Length: 453
Picture (cartoon, rainbow, N blue to C red):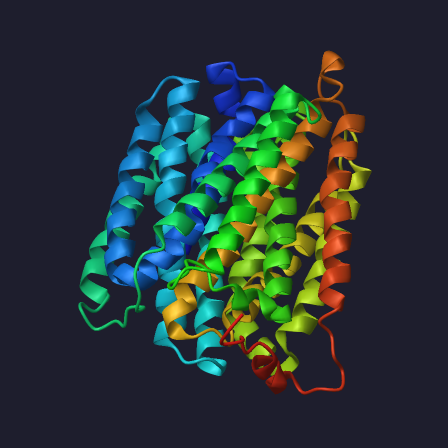
């Protein structure tokens, strides 16, 4: 599933300028092609993760993957921007159930330690391979028609669905005990949906407008009611004791920054390469390719690195590489050097993902009981998607703040400072997890989660 998700994300990213030209979308409206997906994904992930724990990961995975395939087909045949965004929203909703189900299938199949670390490394490598392949395919397909980039995931999803039916065992998985926390599910889903919707609408409505501020107040009020409810129901949707584990909290904050900053950066880079430099879709795809290839080649070794050095050190190095990659792109101009700017920047971003993404997945699920792996996976994915929505909204607002004169080098550079600042903050947060007095093997014990709140 992560291969399919990454394939879709990379293909849509390269196709954005073509979609913008064909459907006549403004940059602020164009972000909804991305944000519509994030809205459905980030808003329902916690519910999706808990549903997988309760109903069975195989059942939830297969059903949601089928919806993903249908939504992909709809996205490729619509001819209206609103309908395209709606299809993306449905697709995001389905991914909110497939992603935590897929990750929790892995974490419950392999015991915590070297085996699981290696499995998660392969999981990450699959995502990187999908992203790299998606870049190349999107460059080729966008040259023909951007709709082809939306239709391409359909046969891949169907093949994955058929394979999953045959490979995933029936009826042997453990399910979490307890009932459904319907109140908690409603409150957290409503809070996340409203939060994501508010931040992606804020650039148009105004960050200090009554509508934006009012929506934020309501969103946080719903979140407060959710916490209040979770402390009192017999079978909570989210056991709040998970958040008393410092490594888990750092992992979730880390993915907010890693994924959020990259989504914002990718949006800016697409505008730079295609709209300002007038590169073709294929040229743009090849510019991003070094990062994806580097992750695909090295990710399978990250499990061994995590066993040897510990996830905390890998995340710190990855955070430093992330900041370095964004910093290099502050040097963009009308004639960028491939060897001096584009390739070095992309290589650093590839190193950042290769080190950080598998390490964050390992750190976020270590010490969590099997019956809560779906929840832990959903929480991690929620962090990434909500982070992506918020950062993309901020970056878009910065990019279009001087829209009277159009997109310029100066506005692009200013936009890139947002991911750069976030990467530096991420480096500081990850550094708090370093401990040179303890062996890396102790890390798993440090991640043990309290049984009670």
